[in-house]
Image 1: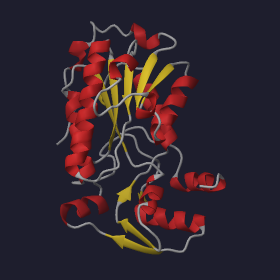
Image 2 (image 1 turned 60 degrees about the vertical axis):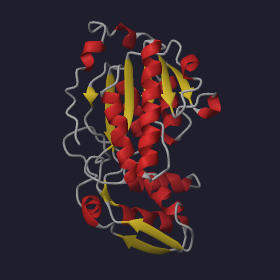
Image 3 (image 1 turned 45 degrees about the vertical axis):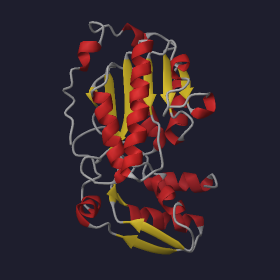
Image 4 (image 1 turned 45 degrees about the horizontal axis):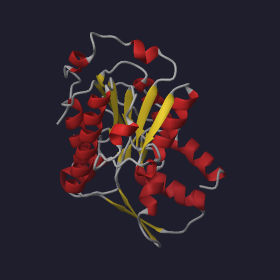
Length: 275
């Protein structure tokens, strides 16, 4: 499944009036604003002189049920959805991302939101992972929704190597074989903010890091930086999914913005900070 960005979101634009995007202190709701990327989006919005509103359970908002959304969305101009779930089960992922997206869009329509920005992942239509089915569902709901939209697909973050390693108990390190072009989470947040402060554009060009890496090599480098001895077990997933992951399935398909920080640079800084 692919999207071309030709959805008629411009029909909902109030005759092309973009004056609110230029007003200082735009109120921007960040769904998942306490997570890895969400915290950075909130920081970047504040640094840009905008008014970020965190939508998270810790702030009294349940994105899955919709409880607390209407009150939190009062006066919001734009929504940035970086909400996340850790499940790899396709049914659970589809349920989560579908429910959250519908709730955000419906509440946004009631509040007069003019732009909904969703973060997605490069290659979700080429790699048959259960989690990716949920992200596809998110894109479907957003592109068919009542609010003008932008979807940004980004590659895995540098932190993906750490997340992969920390999922597996010691003394093993089971790592799927895959090629990726990892990008700094901070650079993703900065790009999301630029998109949020501009008019809706449909499918944005895919964002990736500066260099293609092997996930196994990334994890090996992380182990070395941590001075950890673990048995590294590279595993190729079976079938078409494994072929896509070891091929170009999770690399950007065309031209687009590229981050500047390499995984090696991120790892050096992360290690220096005690990561």
